[in-house]
Image (cartoon, rainbow, N blue to C red):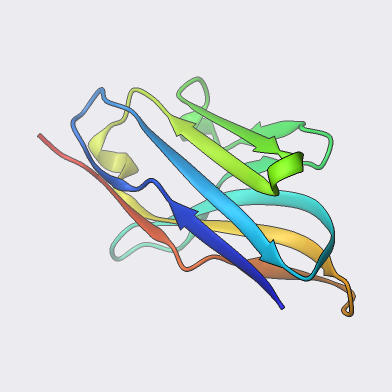
Length: 120
């Protein structure tokens, strides 16, 4: 069984920073592409950033230049460094990944989500 556990959310002031982590644990054979999504109240979940197994990243336009995704393959962990936060970044942030388990094929997994609130 594979699990994704996010951490690092919380309250930040506009212009501030937060760093999210997503640790993958369980019966892992290989981790492929991973990403961060967010869902604000009353809105659809949106893709924020993706990071391939080779570290190549992609971002939605609204966070380009402010957010940076990274991964530590040795720790099976990905990160999202969020700088210059604005109130519109307030949302529940979810980690997502395409993972092959030791006894399962490749499928996608979601974390439980972590709340990020940007407010003065």
